[in-house]
Image (tube, rainbow, N blue to C red; front, side, top):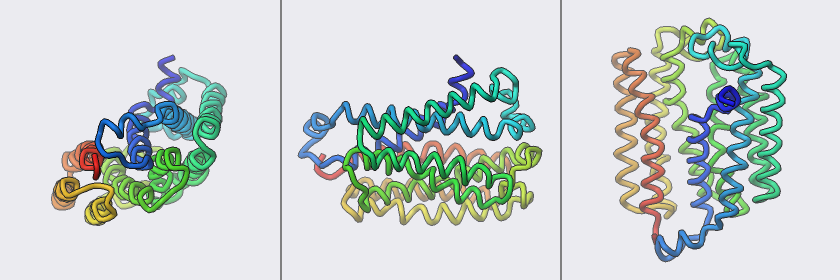
Length: 292
């Protein structure tokens, strides 16, 4: 059972579900206060959304590990995963991942609505059939992979509202930009592993990491104005505006430091900052939602 759970990458899945939940809450109509808002949440629909998205995310992770089992065998940090270590057969992992993915689509479709299910299916398809094969060919795979990576709030919003509005796109844009410093810092830390597996991450293609540091800084700069748009659209208030600006500057500062020093320690600091940034900015969004 532990091996099957490991295939689902639960540490990543919780970040996906957090983003889905944010999208869902913003897809709901506003209320006069927090008590009315909490009472108005359709709990069964929210449960279907979380379970369906979790199943698709887990299935995608399992299928990804099935596809990349040979590359994982060459990397120290992944060699002990169930497939490269021989703890599980490839056929079982394939069946498990496919079953989870189909179950997640059906759960979203029948439990919520077809739009949310289709966005979930697009996320899975673009991740597995476009992003994953590209990793062996070009470092631009990171950009392509950020597209399905930005879909969880879209799934949540569509599940609650039955449609997709500019609010949903803004949430997706924040998550899209956030991914670049996050994943470039991981690629930096494990560039030797990626090189052994033949995965063309940017730090592998350009080992001095100058271009990687530049990308981290540029996306950190771009994230700041985009993260302020929820306040402009009335999704959040002044507290969020100030908090998002400070969080963005903090995130950017970590990127500038890695650009100046270009060390593993600074790359790890960018990763830690990114992991803290996302729940903090989501918390500010909810805390300062107008009318609540």
